[in-house]
Amino acid sequence: MILRLRSLVLSFALTAAVALSALAAGAAGAEEVFWSGARSLPVYSVEREDNALAITFDCAWGTEHTDAILQALEEANVKATFFTVQFWAEEHPDYLKKIDEAGHEIGTHSATHPKMSQLSEEAIRSELTTSSRAITEVTGKPVTLFRPPFGDYDNAVIDTSLALGLMPIQWDVDSLDWKDLSAKEIAERVVTKAKRGSIILCHNNGLHTAEALPVILDTLRARGFTFVPVGELIYRENYTIDHTGRQFSAAKG
Image (cartoon, rainbow, N blue to C red; front, side):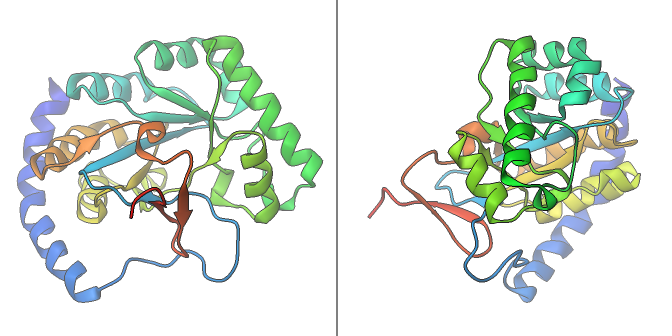
């Protein structure tokens, strides 16, 4: 396949970059701190004993690159999580069904893609319930995950999401594919930042996302990582979340 041939070239170029990045990460110390202080937080990453991580795709605009993304995931036998906006799901029910039938997990990305922290609690609840219902009407499956548009949230957004049975999910690795970076740049960002329990952010309309995927998946697998949907990565109960958004199981010890 063309994607596979390109991935070999990109993989070769990334080998040195990965090694250098690992050294830099060790020197730099801690990861970015997303929030500090007493706040209700979504899950940015998960503390795991195994090497599992999750790759996710936000779906809000277009479908031009979605088939190629699904093909790359299928060829690698990887199950991902797609977060869909209601208007996208209603405009493209065939793709929503295609994603579901391929065995991928689907969460809500809101109804209208607003900045959720600017909404009233009633409006937040409406965004989450109507968008979840739209997904379920197509897939026949309940929705249990929510990703805030723009990564924007406050306590009301997180608390309302949890009250509705929707686990709020962020990310700790941003591919920046929405900036139309090259496939090499996207892959390099992801493979150098991913760690055990990471949640990787991509987009279904990223110009070079599909081309970068084989390199990302092959490189991380070669480093011992496994891919699972977000729903299998996180803890649903008996957990704590630290100030960086990393989730820990509270059932141990």
